[in-house]
Length: 347
Image (cartoon, rainbow, N blue to C red; front, side, top):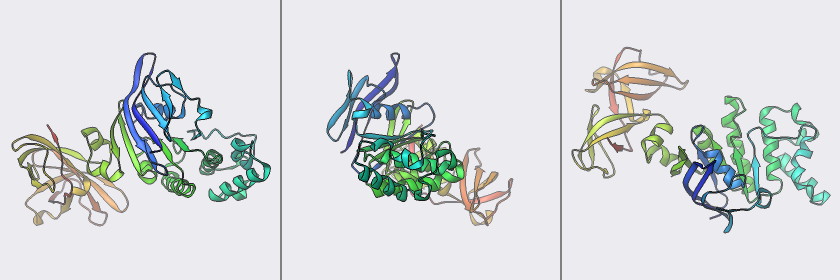
C-alpha cells in the first residue's frame, strides 16, 4: 500500500473538521475524495500534502510516516505533487518554462527532454513558447498537470482541478487526465464534488459526509451497494419508498413484492425503506401492467427522458426511458420492475 491514512482527524481552533478518516491506496491507483461543499474533503487532501497538522491518527507514504500528532514532515520533503484549483501558473513564464519550473536543478539536457516529453503527452508541444494567458482553460489545466508531473512525484494530489472550466469540457478532460496519469504510472488522489468527474477518473472513491468517510469503494458499488442513506441519495439518482420485509428474500412495497438476490439484513415484518433507481422502474403502456402511476414531471436528457412517477399511495419513483418512448405529464402509465440490486435501510 503506497498511501495509508489511519483514523485521521484534523481541526481548527479546537473544532474538529474531519474525524476518524482511514483508507489506503495502492501504487498506480487513482483515488477520489467525493462529497458536498464543506464535508472536509479538501482538508483531508491538505493533511496528505502536509499543509495541515493532525490532531489524531497517522498518514504514511511508502511505509514512511509523514504526519502524526505533534510531528509533520514539511510539504517540500514529501515527494508529493499538487494541481491546484486555480492552476497557479506563472503568467510571466512560457508554457515550457512553467512545466520545467520544478526541475530547475536537473541537468539542462535531462530537463529539456522531460519538458518535451510531457508537452507531447498532454498535446501542447506546439504551445511550448506561448504564455498561459494565450491558452484556453483546458490547455492551462494540462500545463498545470504537466508541471506537477515533471519531477516524477510519488503521489499526485488534484484539488477540484476542473471546477473553473465549462461543464462541456469537464468529462472529456477528465478522461484525458486519467489517460495521462495511467501513461505515467502515477498514483493520484482527486478531490471533487462532481460524481461524474469521480466516475471518469477514479479507480476507488471515498464519500465524505460531515467530516467522516462513510464509504470507500468502486463507483459501481457506491451506486448499487450504498452503505447509508446519504450515499444512496448523493450517488446517482433515486428515491426511497416504504416497504415491509416478507422474508429473507423479498420486500412488499407499493410496487408489489420486490425480490432480492441476496439475503436481506432485516427480519421478516421489519419496516424498511427501499432504494429505487431510475433504471429499476420501467414505464410501459397502461394496459400492459397491473401496476400504475401518474407522470408528474419529465426531464429531457437527449437520448432519454427522466420521469417522476406518482404511485397510488402518493410515493414517487423515477424512471429512465428512451426518448422516443414519450409519456405525457399527467398521463397514467404502466410500471414494470427491473431491479437487480435490492437495497433496504431500516426505517
